[in-house]
Length: 348
Ligand code: 3EB
Image (cartoon, rainbow, N blue to C red; front, side, top):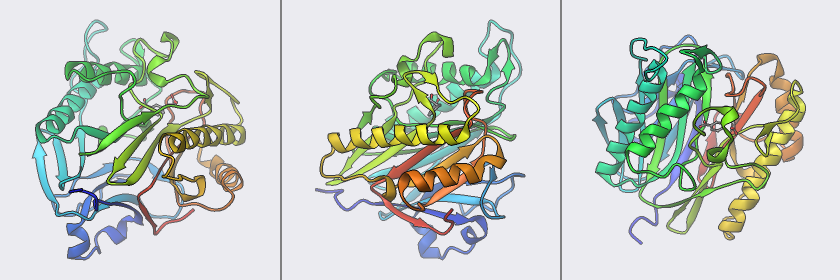
């Protein structure tokens, strides 16, 4: 098979190491996301590296998640989207301001920015034939705040879904994995990883699919799958969406961060079991994933880390960040990926 050898490697490193990558290492970088507040990070060449205003909760330095490929890579720009790609993978990112205010009858600034961001991404991916989206990462400030008559996360969901519909994409079943978190400040930031590969959505039997959430959570349901499972020349990769203490469609364990952490991990375990059922040879394991953990209150980080280590049965590569989670009653959200190489310079 032509692309049988295509590989991804996730490297977690402090931002100071980013500037010290060798030329060879740089050439192999697809892109990545750095988390720091205040913002202001060194880029590397024209690579799509997103800079998100979030405070890392481990170590004293801003932290970056860098995706490396093993193919010959090129960079490009499509409207506001910066991207880098090889034969198999494409990583891209963009940061948009929210345009001037609107009335309650118009698209809100965040909704409009979200829709135009997703339209730009879909037009890039359609033009270049990267038909499988492995993962979206969505970050914007004040996610739980009400403005223009609606919570901002709900505004985001309308803009996102409208872009899917405008590009003739399904908003149920065949949707990508994602997360949506509240940053400290700044613009709407979106990063994504796409591929020329077969990808299927994975749902969690313990949870109602997010795209079927009832309207009490907003006029449009969120457009994401619980995970994306990608088949890449015999190698399977799994991208697990942000996962929280939700069973059915309701939040459980309000006010109890330890119980919320355990419930989130039970959900991840259920998604993993579902992925292993769909890809029996993959053998995904909880203790072989890379995790990113969003904690609403910094003082909860030790509790969350302790519960994770206990549940998983040992320390695992994890990035801990302070972030607002998209329901006001959620204290923690955990995402994970596996099946690719993992190199963690910063391990919790
Ligand atoms: C949830 O399960 C928690 O809107 O893209 C998790 C992952 C959540 C992705 C998104 C939201 C999103 O509903 C929140």
